[in-house]
Image (cartoon, rainbow, N blue to C red; front, side, top):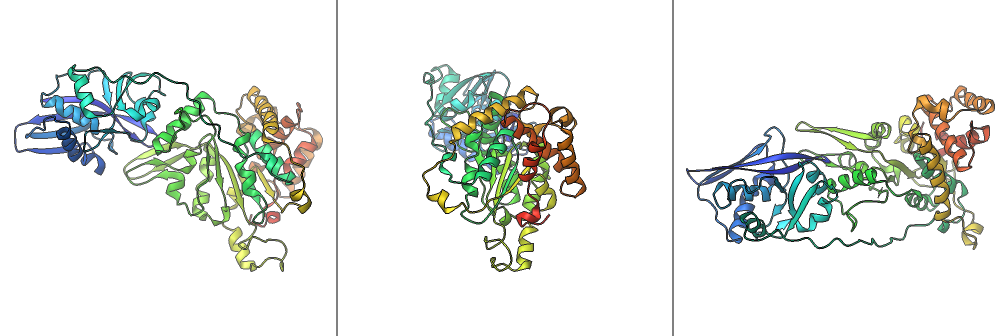
Length: 504
C-alpha cells in the first residue's frame, strides 16, 4: 500500500515542499529512504521505529520504502520524521487512507515518541500550500507568523495518531495572550563623554544607513560608539521584520517571545570567523551566515585589521547588491544580506599609532597591517573617521551629551525625508537620481571637482559623499541643493586612508 504526506525541507532561508511517499510491501523486512536524503534523514528509520514502539503503535515487519519527492532536491535535517511516521501508519493500514488530505506535518521525533522542534519553522510553513499544518507545540507561535495556515501543535506522536483516527480532537492551543517583551536596556549615547566627531558620525550613519569605519587606539571609545548605533535606528516594518525572522528561524537563532524580530539586529562576529561562517553555506547544510543574520540591521566588525583579508574582500559584493549568492557542488542559494556595516580597528598592530617613535611597530609591520584592508573595500565605507582618546577633562566632567532618544528624533525626521523622496535611506539613492535628490550649488560642485582632480575621490566615492551630504542636510532640516558646508563636512567624515594609517 502507498501513502503520501505533505511536508517541507529547508534550503538556505527558503522552504522546499516535499511529498513523503511511503510504500509497504511483502518481502524481507527492511526500511529504505530514497530521494537525496542527508545523514539525518536516513537516520529517520531508527527514530521512527523507536517512536512508534514507544507510542504502542505497530511497526510493520515488511519491506518499507520511503521516497522524498522531488527526488532531485537534497533533503536535510530531521524535520521530516513526523511525516514519515504518519505516512508509514497510513501505508500499513493503521490510519485510514486520505487521513492527511489538506494537512502537512513538520517535526523531529524523539525515541520516546515526543515531537521536537526543528529550525526554520517560518520558511518551512511558508513553503506549504494553504491548509492545516501540524508542528511541535513549542513552534506554534513561530508557525502562525506566516498567517496562511491553520496550525495545530502537538507534544507526542500518539496525539497525532488519535486525532487522525478520530479518537480525539487536536490539542487546543492556549488563548493568544498579548506578549509584553521585556524592555531590554539599550546603551545610550549620553554615556559617552566627549568624542564629538564620533557621535556625529554615528548619528549620520543611523540617519542615512551609511557604512562607518572608525580607526583609533584601544580604549578610545570605538566599540562603545558602534554598539549605540542600533539604538538610533527605527523599529522594523512588518515586511522587514518578517524577512529578518525568516533568516533567524532558518539559522536556528533564538527568536523574541513574540516570535517576530521587531528591532534591527546587531551581529558582531569574532575576528577569527571563517568565510563560511560569515557568508553562509557549507557542504550539505546551506545555512545563512552572519551577514544574513544582520539583514536589515547592523554588522559590527571589531578589530577589523585582524580579520583575514579574503574574508573582508568577500563582503564587497553583498555590500553593493544586498544579497549573497553561495554556490556549492550540490546546491546554490541566495541569502538576503542588506546590512549596515560598522567597523573598528587600531591604527597599527600595537594600537598606539602616531609618528615613528611613539609607535612600537616597525614600518613593515604597519604596512602589512594596513594592507589587510583593500582599497575597494575601504572605498565602500561612506564614513571613515579617526577616533582619538577623549580629553581627561571631558572624561571626568559631569556634563553628558545628548541622549539617544533626542538623537533618534532627528534620525526619524531625516529618514522620513528620504522616504518622501522614494528611498528607505539616503545610502540607497541610485546614482542616476543623485542630480535630482542631491543637487549641488556651484560652490559645492567646485569643491567636489577639486577633490576628484586631486585623486581624493573615486567615482564611487563621489556618489557616496553626495549621499552623506544629503543626510547631513536632512539632519539640519535643510531642503534644496547641497551647500559647500554640507559637502565639506561629508568630506571631513571621509578621511583619507593615509591619514587613518591604513593602506589605500
